[in-house]
Length: 505
Figure 1 (tube, rainbow, N blue to C red):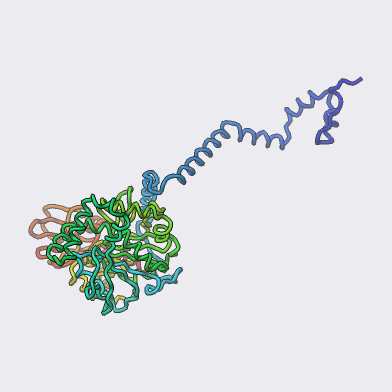
Figure 2: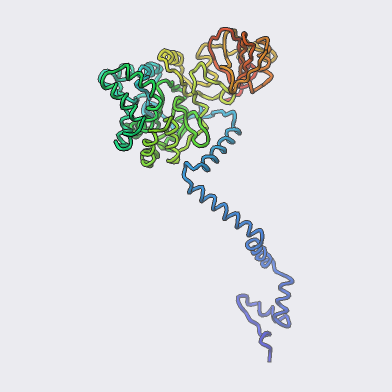
């Protein structure tokens, strides 16, 4: 009689019993199996080691940690400081990698064709204290103006005969501050000092006390301005709900339409785009209102339709917020819409003759100018840019103002370009201090120019002050204006090198 252990047991593999019977007992078979594992057994052992061994446990821990981080990131509010800080630093690193952007889309076929007349609305923000600017803004529109739809918003409402004048077409001025206060109700606003100031101001206008109203507008204009942004956009969306793009500009902001159109034609308006000149720290990166703000249909619907609670909170915050453009950004962030800084360099916070032409934007188009608060300055800009029919590059500003570009003179050799190009009684550096390096005790203008050339790409222009012997070395250059007692010039060699890059595209 055989021992039970010698009976073949066949489970799964029919040859297993035969294989076992070749040995004296099953223990010998198992020992042999341990001594000579099959490839399949080796693979299974390796997989078990990967799954349950030290490396496997590390992998599982990392996977769990990664899943936790992703889940935490998703659950973080859009305005959480961790999310904002990480986003800010990532964008800063991206900007460092693309420090000299070239907008190849500028002359490319439009990916999303735009008609400025039918697809956009321009929201012109003015106020009682700057009411003379509104008409100047419309008068400055170029002969090739394509805009058709406008909305004028302010801290007062125009009466019959006092509307803004768009080349003979009257445009009513809407009081959006009243709209903000109405949305809050009396209980939320009666005890607020800003509201009290506004009510005094509104009463002065209503009772015909123009001088008092002007004084109050001058002293409280900035505070009241913060009450216009959100309500102005709400009004624009209610009147023009199907526009692809919403352009919010101040009454001292000039829009260069030939540069604007290719940008909008490059972007999908259904995507929530928020564009403008980026300012602020990582807590709130916002588009500077004076440089112009652009919002797509996607951004407006996300704000107005999808996040009414954030909009209502913004009305309440406007009673204490200093800057309305910052409030707008904070509200958009709560709706998941962040400022797209890829296009920030296309917007200028200065008037054309003071626009800072830096190396990283030399070949880029410019869309807006700011600081044209005096009607005659706005008229001047309108006349200067009236006949511009193609995208305007930052470097093109020289041509608009009739300034010859010395670095374009074909007769100049590289050695001659390396010598200072001088303009007496002019300033191409644009002030001193801050980013502009100041060297004291420079005896001659030519010496100042050489110092600029020695700095290479860090110096775009220089200005020597005859009286103080100061040499100002600027990282940008401006068209500038006449200033007695100064000698100035651009870095011609650097400018030619940059322009050669522009000509490739």
